[in-house]
Image 1 (cartoon, one colour):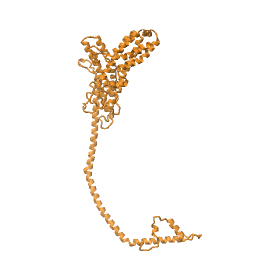
Image 2 (cartoon, helix red, strand yellow):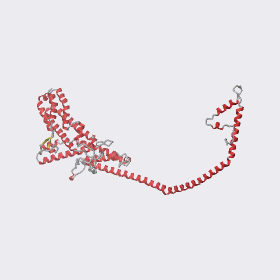
Image 3 (spheres, rainbow, N blue to C red):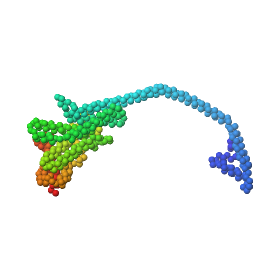
Image 4 (spheres, rainbow, N blue to C red):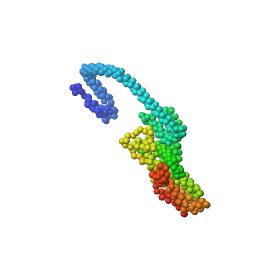
Length: 481
């Protein structure tokens, strides 16, 4: 239109993206005024702008009047097309709405009912699992009570005689660990998950489990501290005949069974790290501390008794006999521990083989083809490693000798009859102490722990000349200064 009808208006200047109203107004003012005039005439540029606006308005009016019919026709066509599209969309929307309503009735409501049933079934399953776990805990609790009664020798054998069940502590320890494992479950899906929310289980834990664990620990440590086979050997030497021999074997067997049961119970009740560890890395701290306590107690009591015996020489023979008896107990302890394999622990990775002397009678049989971690060959190795020694009797004599020299020095510093008696009986002391060490390394064959030997014959378990020399030097060496 603009090209068919010439116009003095420069439309290209107005349509330029860089058009500036201020620059355009400035050019109008400069073109209609003389730069040398003192007065400024704005009416002329303003009139020109008004004329331009009027021309543009006339041009727009002409264009719209001439193109009104085509615009209306085009608009009418667009409206008709939109109406037809809307009709089709409404039909499709109605079909989708009907399909959704049908699906809602056939699927959604049924799914909601099924979801309610699923939630109910899931909660019922959780309730059943929790109830089953509670029932198992209560059964284990009753079992633990019976085992504690058996360990207390409250059970009765034939003829109304109390039945001494040496394995009761071991069974009670396994029951305690199984209870502890169930009560420590903190992952959903585990057997004991949620038990701590049940009041009766909290009561069971506080009134039975913790006291029972303390009782089993105390009785196992008591049985360990009371372990002795020296009395069996002494009784065998004083008696004679098959009856005495049979009685000695029975006492030694009972002492060994008590010790094995106590050691197994302490091993099972030893704390297990929270992270999973292989059997080879597991250290039964409770068992090791109890065995170390047994050794330290024997060393301490022997040191006190020997110091008293050296102060009063008439009692020295009896004192040395008692010390050799303690060493015989330690030799027997070492012999028994060297034959005991670590028992199966419920909280450690399963092992394919377990010790005949300590196993859970209710444990499931493990597949022989199962790959198992390497474990210590016996229970003596961890104890020797913790004491940093190669032999328990050697540790006993060397620890006793290391503390004995200062005690002898104190006796000599005090002077008097005791000091003179020690110096005058130096050779006798040397022979007696050497004999004490060598006698402490022998066990009667009746004890059944000393290896092969004829009936009633003492069996030497090693060469102890070096330990005898160390003990002799700790006493006689001080006397020679």
